[in-house]
Image (cartoon, rainbow, N blue to C red; front, side, top):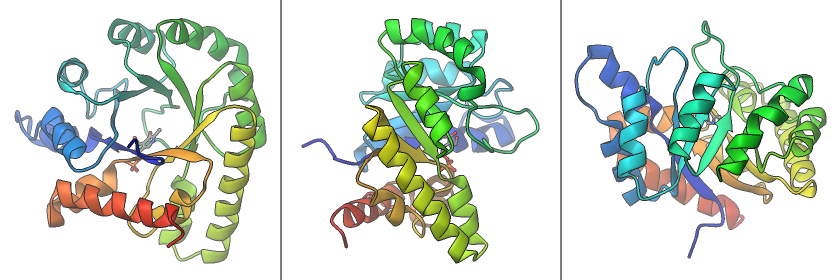
Length: 249
Ligand code: PXP
């Protein structure tokens, strides 16, 4: 039976480790296959403009070697659109990119770039890709994503995770309430709802418990935890926590 709440495992930081030494290992495809065996429903990879982790050849090998869906994360540039149209991955997730950031800091401003993004995603939709917008929980961005014809919104959980890590628990709970409201609004507009960024064993359950959410995308923590417990067990534990949350436990 298909999982009601899917787990997409992001393998970017397997490539980060490889690139740190310029070696041929560890191989993101090997990690992706192991992730699938351990309970991942899909694989996510972000080809950044500066190629700091995943490189073009990784996308080639992931497309050729994976038997599960690939969620291809990218900035809304013409170079990335051409790469996506060549590969036609299952999903394309549009993210904002700033060269100086260490990771994707905020959500995409769909409302402020609506006409361009509508035109940008049209050929991707025609090619059969499920187009996802990585956005904050604000209603304006959710409504704009629906208007331009995106199939999916992925809600940015990074701020919620940071507030948890810093011990700002009241603010964390307020942020969670906004994510809940955003997920409800998105679903009511016919969007499929995903969430991700910064999720850990400690923060995943309240997000996984939001019934409108159909997919979580998690990477950095799982690759880090693999150092201690192994990638397969880390993914299996994440899945277990997600299922517990869905069962109300
Ligand atoms: N979702 C999106 C759109 C992302 O950009 C990222 C980070 O690349 C993730 C999920 C996964 O975030 P993390 O690696 O912090 O789990």
